Length: 392
Image 1 (cartoon, one colour):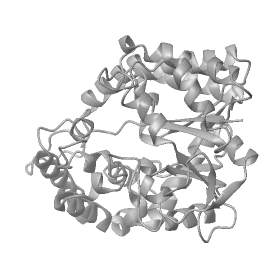
Image 2 (cartoon, helix red, strand yellow):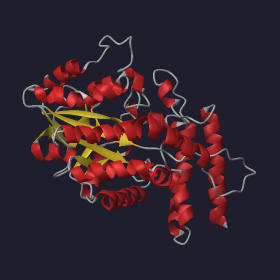
Image 3 (cartoon, one colour):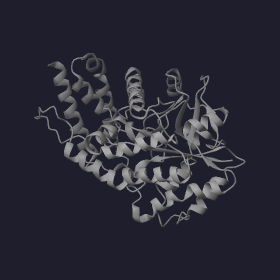
Image 4 (tube, one colour):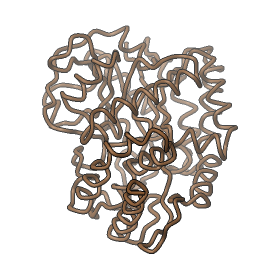
């Protein structure tokens, strides 16, 4: 038996407006642009894809299952501009076939810079998931699947049963992402690793006519999944939700592809679909996996260079987290705390990346800046405004 574990990341940042050193307005975010992008992706991806997932659950009488993480920043935008998206997610939650997992509320890199802030954001997100969908998350995924042994230990101490991360070749070596693993120095935490080859076949290569396996048919994909039998238990398909309708447009046939695999996969042998928690409950770990250095699911290197790869990014991250104690002590100014946390969203530092080779097109996706340097200057101008508010 091979169990397909679909996990979708749903995230939208609060993009910053153009901000000069002469600006004193405390509204740092481009509401018009954020609403425009949100509505665009809602229409192209979030609504049609979520309604399709709902139909798949119904058509297969609960045998089709999937898992999601929805960032706090995405949910706030849905609440403001697209409540109909949350309504469909509410219906999915009631089916019992969809699981919502935890992450940092603001999609931040807080673990690297401030553990208290990391724990605070994770707990805030878990409370939100419980309020919206009625169940406290058992599984955690760090921003962009960033992970090492230290992350695992902190996450286990917070009470989670499992964590998701990237099945990077340089970490796995001869081993397969089709098994579950234990992190070192953790008693019970389980690791589920992304099968990046099969995930990226859908997320990045689906419409590439130059790809040797194009077109990717459902029959072909079902055979690839079935080949896991005898060499593993799970096929972890982790991807951005925007894969469906936004990264891969509707006219590529991506929605038809998503609709067909459940039946094809379950028609071969005894293969099935599980949520992440169900996979953890069903399958035992197959050994310990040591990850001493930070990995992620980003770019060809599967490391954290997409966010900390140059001096601008490092400086911006250092400066925003250097304000942590002061901002967190301002209990009476909740807007200041919220603004500061929105500035932690990883996208702001991604826009500062100077990686323009194999991963250049990915870094330009929904990037509002003409250059990484413009992004850095704009960000630092806003950070100076935050400092001024602290002094006041």
